Length: 138
Image (cartoon, rainbow, N blue to C red; front, side):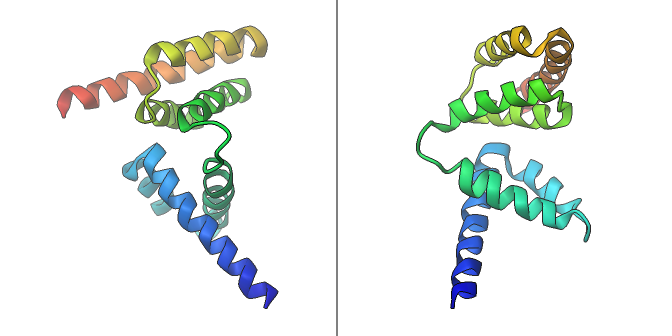
């Protein structure tokens, strides 16, 4: 009986997680990540969807816009350029302004170090320019 309850809970986390992941990151981004998954990486995609998106991003304590800005600051500190680009797009989808993203990166640079900040600005600039180009073409 407990096993069934756990599976149901895990399925619920996945279902709510994939919904939020798509709302924040966009269908194309999520589809690309899921389509690229292999037998080896599929468990990671499931974990990300259930835990990051199905548990953390659905919490009520702060809104999605704030979560996006916190995520950007964290990824800047980690020098996680690829993930940062995706989350800059997600932040823009969540209603963050370019100025807010810039301010978070400036603030993060002071605490995370100049090399992290420089790398984060490069990645964010690339994501913002791609976002603006897509917006102009729509």
